[in-house]
Amino acid sequence: MPKAIQGESQGAGLRIGIVAARFNQDVTDRLLHGALKALREVGVREEDIEVVRVPGAFEVPLAADLLAGRGRYDAIVCLGAIVRGETQHHQFIAHSVFTALQQVQLMRHIPVAVGILTTETLEQAFARSKDDPGNKGYEAARVAVECAQLHRQLG
Image 1 (cartoon, helix red, strand yellow):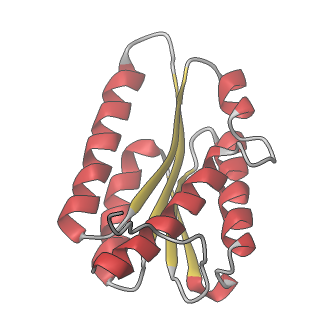
Image 2 (image 1 turned 60 degrees about the vertical axis):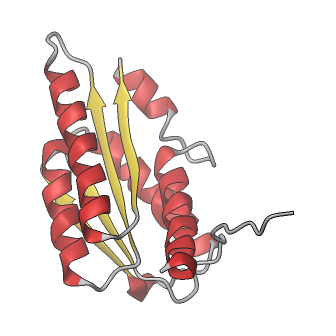
């Protein structure tokens, strides 16, 4: 049987940066709440978490890159809500944001977990940001911890 390497869901000793968009703040606050809840559950200390708020999803990649460039964090969690409007604007924003976040991850060699919703309606966004384990901020934070641990193993 080949050796399997995977990250653990243990956050003690990890430092996590969170970038959260303010646009659609009713949703993004819930995503942030979910992310913080997940990090507490896996043992990340409050003093090892830094939250940066930016105007909207389009600004998330720059803040993520700036945090990654500091060299203080083991992973970055990115939160936002891109909801379809009357035009195709949401598609351009989503594509740009996701591509840029992938570049941050690859260029800075730091896990970037994406909890940015791309939904057709606000109702869908609220459904994905409930106070339960299906909250996409919660899920992104868990991914960040696991990938940070994996990064340490493979480092």
